[in-house]
Length: 127
Image 1 (cartoon, rainbow, N blue to C red):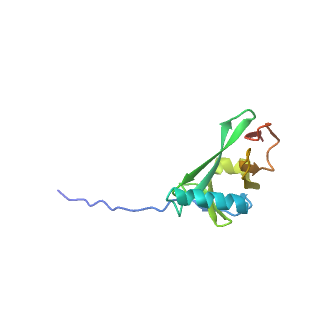
Image 2: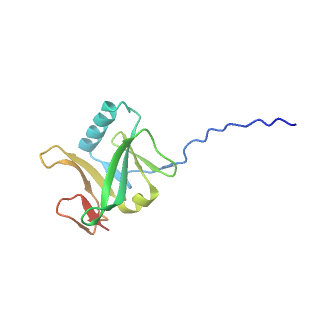
Image 3: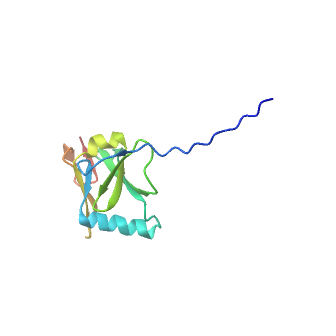
């Protein structure tokens, strides 16, 4: 019997590099994301920005802090923060700016040039 040896290969994630034409963070948003990543013990983490079905207008933003990009993601560095977007969501967020407003009705706000309409709460949109 011939012994076979398994060759272990560690493939690097196959993500693409993008630029701020996809998504851009303001200074306030970058500061808030950096603070949140530090609090979670993820100094090299990323902010995932995605578009999912839902909300009163049909589409809504979903943001999450993660350890790093996944396969097929587009990685953008903006204001010192690494942001990842999946290819499907990239169709909806191209050209968007993410801001953080520190007010009573504040939080993360997306200025999206692709949004045809948005609801009164500002949490969902149509494209």
